[in-house]
Image 1 (cartoon, one colour):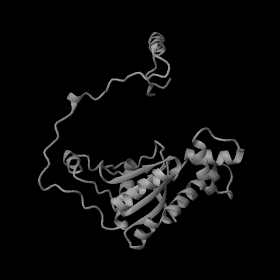
Image 2 (cartoon, one colour; image 1 turned 90 degrees about the vertical axis):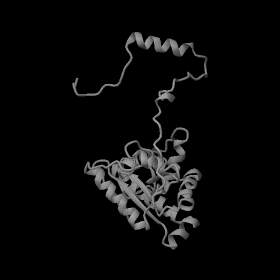
Image 3 (cartoon, one colour; image 1 turned 180 degrees about the horizontal axis):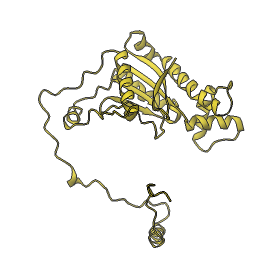
Image 4 (spheres, one colour; image 1 turned 30 degrees about the horizontal axis):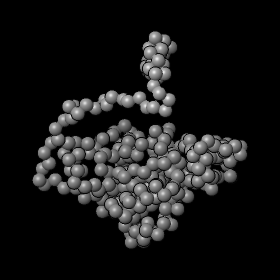
Amino acid sequence: MDPNAQILDTPSPSRRGLLLAAAGSAAVGSVLPLASPFPASAAAPAPALPAEAETAAGPVSPEEALRRLAAGNRRWRTYGQEHPHESAFIRMRLTRAQRPFAIVLGCVDSRVPPELVFDQGLGDLLTVRSAGEVLDEAVLGSVAFGVLELEIPLLLVLGHQSCGAVGAAVRAEETGEPLPAHIQYLADQIRPSIDHTQQGEARIDATVDAHARRTRDRLVAEPDIARRMAAGKLAVVAARYGLRDQRVRTLA
């Protein structure tokens, strides 16, 4: 065994027996209560908010917002992260209001958290995540909140390499086998984006890009979003994140 490998905590046989006995003693359908790991006494006193503290001004244009994302991704992929906007002062300032400069509509994949990928902090991004960036009413409403209520100037649709939702949709179409439960809904939404000019893994890879573009185009067709774009107050951009090089590339 590799001495450097990290091993998750596995119960010993006797410990496992205790756990099984405890589980068996619970009534069917009941939920075992969990003790809170955050005792109230552990909370640190909040620092006083300076009188001059106000909300961040935010960028003045969609172009500046996109430059901020590009700069943050550069820091991330070159291991120069700054982890900005985490101080006590910023935390208190954000109790007054929020002024995020970009909306990122991304996938739920645990390897692509937007705040890390773009090296942003508290109050910087409004993130909306669904498997495969699939749109539904909840996702559209969340995006609309950022565009209309917070007047955020940039909406970025972020697909990514090796997307499991896209892969499942492609394989389901090829085999004709239904997917379990609500996962079939995701596949149905992604299916129109499948690139039939490619085969195998290349088809999945091409569909990732095609689906990000299609999602962008569907958002652009929303009347409220289109009006803000026409006024020069909003840009909607499709992009792709590479797991291997950690680079975000915009898609035409």
